[in-house]
Length: 449
Image 1 (tube, rainbow, N blue to C red):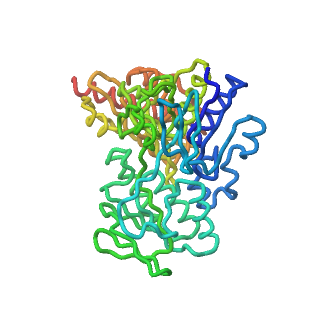
Image 2: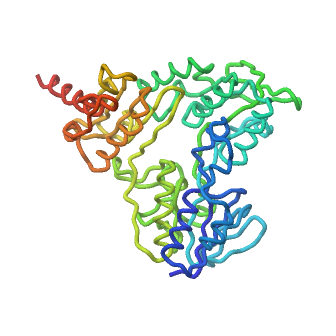
Image 3: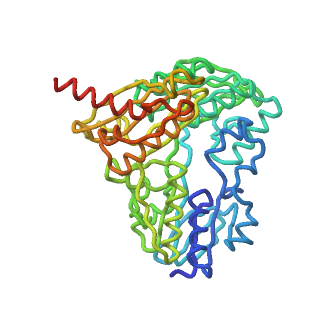
């Protein structure tokens, strides 16, 4: 067992790793190096704080730094940025030149926003909403009445969540997206329904990227790729993220998809006594049966716990992901798990998709909503993935049923056989999940007739 465990990154994965290590070995010296001024805060809550749904930024912080230091006895160091790793000497170097030795190291550096190489993005009214400091700055601008016209660059999860929140604050919102659809994590046919809803709340411009930002100190103007110029009060750039692997990769750690760190099921990297977790790793994908970069909150927490446990001398393993995510887009719940049809085919799988629409509750019960489901499947009924869109919030739990089926290796026929609950306020006799599986079976029967 190492006498000192150093964790690079104090986000969800990092603090999970540090806390797990403390539980395994009470006498271990645990040091966490966090580059920002906050630790253990909810990254996924940032759009809701920036938009006013969450009133206090401290509400996003699971525990204050003093709690980790005094109760957990974790040496949490804020504003401590690691810039280099020397695995031969077992040393991490900080940006102030300080060297910190380790017996074991856990890298949880997360992911950084991808900013297009454009002029003007350094303006203080341009935000990425990737750190709590950035969200606080945006919220101050909104509270002061200084952001009535807002541009969102990117129509993915964060971009659409921010668009909803800003529109709810009374802002005039324009969304520009370089791709021809919203939410690239969906198949185009499913994204069309989401697009229609977004257009009722915001000015959506697809296939149009940001060309640059200019300012005279007061006026903020965005130039789009189609030569349109928009005078706005604030810009949120949500054009994706990339794994922060620089120090580990430079030290020789093996990387994989998207440049993320490759790890085994105990979160070991290729470097001795160096572990990694969270958004900087490529976790094992149970559908693809190989590593994939799927940066999501639950994976960060789980892999962090495994890394800290093993680094401290305990035993744990991470079983992998199936890529389950859900997003609130104005009135819609948009969810996915496994592979889209486009993803399956891009990975060389023979796949098809079957679409169905079913009622979310009994026909006669108030609040019934149509639920659109797309099941992606192989030629022999192999279940590969699903996408669901509905105004019914229960969609978030319905996708979990299909995620469970993927994790367990069920085929579509087994999914159709599941004994799911029924009561008029919650579901019809045949839940939308069952209807979707039955639709695949009907399609197969029709094809063989």
